[in-house]
Length: 96
Image 1: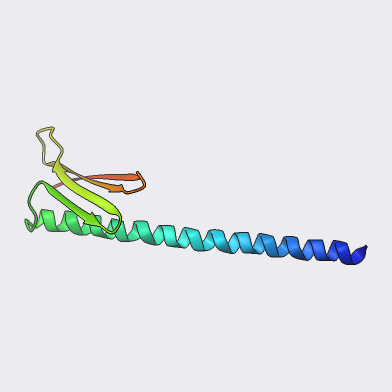
Image 2: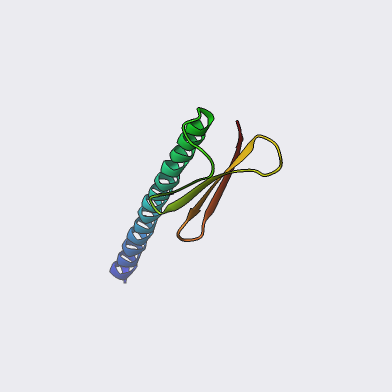
């Protein structure tokens, strides 16, 4: 009976450890994916502010579609919109 209890506890401990490691790896990969996109958005903003890009801008970056456009409210506000193929959207506004 003790062997059965000990075996069950060992299996449960390894299952919990496996789930924890799996979640850590998935979170790390997810953050890296968004971090690369954030870097690209900063680069586009920098290039536009230094007159290296013109409006409207549309490009594909990895699995993201990025658009840069004027805000349309008469000010010097611009909008960066990144849409992932899965439907996730990231919006960023900046001023020149």
